[in-house]
Image (cartoon, rainbow, N blue to C red; front, side, top):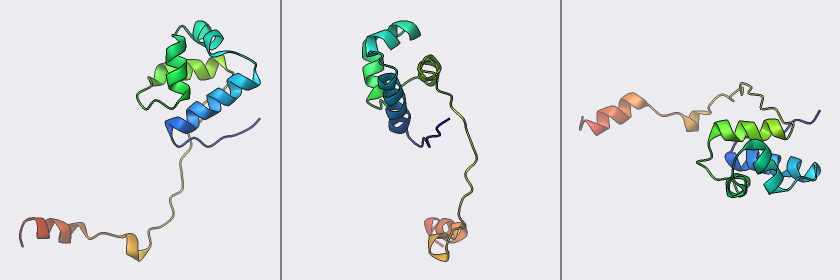
Length: 95
């Protein structure tokens, strides 16, 4: 089993496209199996930001891919990354 980290729609699209190619399937074949147009597959594989998640999940399923979601452990912010929200609000209020 291979794991790929997906952080953007482009990452998801590239993973799906790579899998489709590995399986030797055309965009038209996947589109027919999923019930979408070939144009939708082309746009999805190009990383179209407004691709419907439900359809994208159907494509992944058809390609034998699963989407796993995990919690990222965020690194603690360094002192240079912190913002004093109270000071920002006070400045905005003219205080």
